[in-house]
Amino acid sequence: MSWWIVGFAAAGAVVVVVAALLLGILWQARRIRALARAAAGTVGEIDANTRSVWRLAKINRTAGALLDGATAIERNAAAIRAAVAHDGAGEDAA
Image (cartoon, rainbow, N blue to C red; front, top):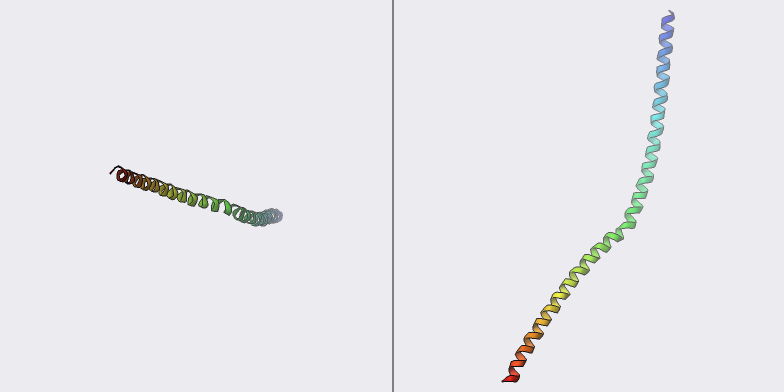
Protein backbone atom coordinates (compact mmCIF):
# COMPACT_ATOMS: atom_id res chain seq x y z
CA MET A 1 0.00 0.00 0.00
CA SER A 2 2.88 2.40 0.57
CA TRP A 3 3.86 2.17 -3.12
CA TRP A 4 0.48 3.62 -4.01
CA ILE A 5 1.19 6.60 -1.83
CA VAL A 6 4.59 7.12 -3.48
CA GLY A 7 2.96 6.83 -6.92
CA PHE A 8 0.26 9.35 -6.07
CA ALA A 9 2.84 11.73 -4.63
CA ALA A 10 4.98 11.44 -7.78
CA ALA A 11 1.93 11.98 -9.99
CA GLY A 12 0.94 14.99 -7.91
CA ALA A 13 4.43 16.43 -8.22
CA VAL A 14 4.31 15.95 -12.01
CA VAL A 15 0.91 17.67 -12.16
CA VAL A 16 2.21 20.62 -10.11
CA VAL A 17 5.32 20.97 -12.33
CA VAL A 18 3.23 20.77 -15.52
CA ALA A 19 0.75 23.32 -14.15
CA ALA A 20 3.61 25.67 -13.23
CA LEU A 21 5.10 25.33 -16.71
CA LEU A 22 1.71 25.94 -18.31
CA LEU A 23 1.22 29.09 -16.23
CA GLY A 24 4.67 30.27 -17.26
CA ILE A 25 3.85 29.65 -20.92
CA LEU A 26 0.59 31.57 -20.60
CA TRP A 27 2.36 34.48 -18.90
CA GLN A 28 5.00 34.59 -21.66
CA ALA A 29 2.30 34.40 -24.36
CA ARG A 30 0.51 37.41 -22.86
CA ARG A 31 3.81 39.28 -22.64
CA ILE A 32 4.60 38.48 -26.28
CA ARG A 33 1.13 39.62 -27.34
CA ALA A 34 1.60 42.95 -25.52
CA LEU A 35 5.01 43.45 -27.13
CA ALA A 36 3.58 42.58 -30.56
CA ARG A 37 0.85 45.18 -30.13
CA ALA A 38 3.44 47.79 -29.17
CA ALA A 39 5.58 46.80 -32.17
CA ALA A 40 2.57 47.02 -34.50
CA GLY A 41 1.89 50.54 -33.26
CA THR A 42 5.50 51.53 -33.85
CA VAL A 43 5.42 50.01 -37.34
CA GLY A 44 2.31 52.08 -38.07
CA GLU A 45 4.11 55.24 -36.99
CA ILE A 46 7.15 54.38 -39.10
CA ASP A 47 4.89 53.75 -42.10
CA ALA A 48 3.15 57.09 -41.63
CA ASN A 49 6.47 58.91 -41.22
CA THR A 50 8.10 57.39 -44.32
CA ARG A 51 5.22 57.81 -46.77
CA SER A 52 6.53 61.29 -47.64
CA VAL A 53 9.86 59.75 -48.65
CA TRP A 54 8.13 57.45 -51.14
CA ARG A 55 6.06 60.38 -52.40
CA LEU A 56 9.26 62.40 -52.85
CA ALA A 57 10.75 59.60 -54.95
CA LYS A 58 7.66 59.67 -57.19
CA ILE A 59 7.90 63.46 -57.45
CA ASN A 60 11.56 63.15 -58.44
CA ARG A 61 10.69 60.66 -61.18
CA THR A 62 7.96 62.98 -62.47
CA ALA A 63 10.33 65.96 -62.39
CA GLY A 64 12.90 63.94 -64.33
CA ALA A 65 10.30 63.10 -66.97
CA LEU A 66 9.33 66.77 -67.21
CA LEU A 67 12.98 67.74 -67.56
CA ASP A 68 13.42 65.19 -70.34
CA GLY A 69 10.37 66.65 -72.10
CA ALA A 70 11.66 70.21 -71.71
CA THR A 71 15.06 69.15 -73.07
CA ALA A 72 13.37 67.59 -76.10
CA ILE A 73 11.35 70.77 -76.67
CA GLU A 74 14.53 72.85 -76.42
CA ARG A 75 16.30 70.63 -78.99
CA ASN A 76 13.34 70.85 -81.35
CA ALA A 77 13.17 74.65 -80.95
CA ALA A 78 16.89 74.91 -81.70
CA ALA A 79 16.42 72.76 -84.81
CA ILE A 80 13.51 74.93 -85.95
CA ARG A 81 15.52 78.12 -85.28
CA ALA A 82 18.45 76.72 -87.26
CA ALA A 83 16.15 75.72 -90.12
CA VAL A 84 14.47 79.14 -90.19
CA ALA A 85 17.83 80.90 -90.01
CA HIS A 86 19.15 78.74 -92.84
CA ASP A 87 16.08 79.44 -95.00
CA GLY A 88 16.35 83.15 -94.22
CA ALA A 89 20.02 83.22 -95.22
CA GLY A 90 19.19 81.75 -98.61
CA GLU A 91 16.59 84.47 -99.26
CA ASP A 92 19.03 87.26 -98.44
CA ALA A 93 21.55 85.89 -100.94
CA ALA A 94 19.00 85.73 -103.76
